[in-house]
Every structure is written in structure tokens, then in C-alpha cells.
Length: 77
Image (cartoon, rainbow, N blue to C red; front, side, top):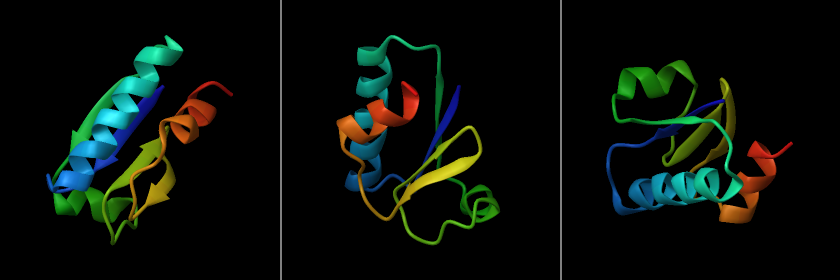
């Protein structure tokens, strides 16, 4: 499982990364979590508002911090 957290490093972007990492740890799943700060890479996903979370190439949330429950639902399906 490949998870990318997109954002330049603002407080909400850092919070999104924290929530994703906590959810992955709680679920005990194998996943790589990568923080993307490069705007060119973000544009490849069509993301214009941050933070955003991409799971296996699919944009799951844009412009807000997902809840831990949301992330758990995505990764435990």
C-alpha cells in the first residue's frame, strides 16, 4: 500500500501526515507513507488545495485533514 500526503508543510499538512501515520500504525498494515512537498508532483494528481491524501494513486481527500477513522476505513478494506 502506497500513501502520499501532499502539502507544502503547513500545520494542517503536518497534522494530516500525523493522522495517516497513526492510522497505519493502529491498523498494523504494510504501507509506505511519503510526504510530498513539491508542487509539480502535487499537480500530477490534480491537487489544487492542501492537504491531500493519495492512496495507491487515488486521491482520497483534498483541502482538509482526514479523521483517523476515515483513514482506517480506507486502509482496512
